[in-house]
Length: 183
Image (cartoon, rainbow, N blue to C red):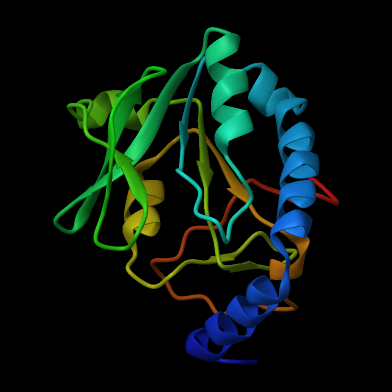
């Protein structure tokens, strides 16, 4: 089994080989697959990451949620923690130290953030057992360890691997959504 570092390098190479058009087409398929899942349709609130150019676009998910009257929360890094910020269309964003757009509005209380129905999270790699490999800072694992709602990984199918190395603090997901499948 490759180490986490080796797996990160391999998946980053797969992602960099995709063209912008391939990513756009795959993002459309993944978002449609997610929006019509019972866990998404039935949710009243969701926590969702702001995607980068290397990830499937989360914009369609955010738009669909808002149009259907769902509360949307976006992450922001504050020190070693990730907080949830309630989002409304038109809110301001700023680029963080990792090159990710984050909302600048006031964060929600921790209890409110942890009571959200669904968390749609990024990942660098995943396996059929729904283990996720993140970028290595542990922000999502810390958040997900206390989160009681549905945990959904959102990725491209090229990010799937045979086995993701896991450690005791890693949190498995309930679902993985790609442009090809939801499992």
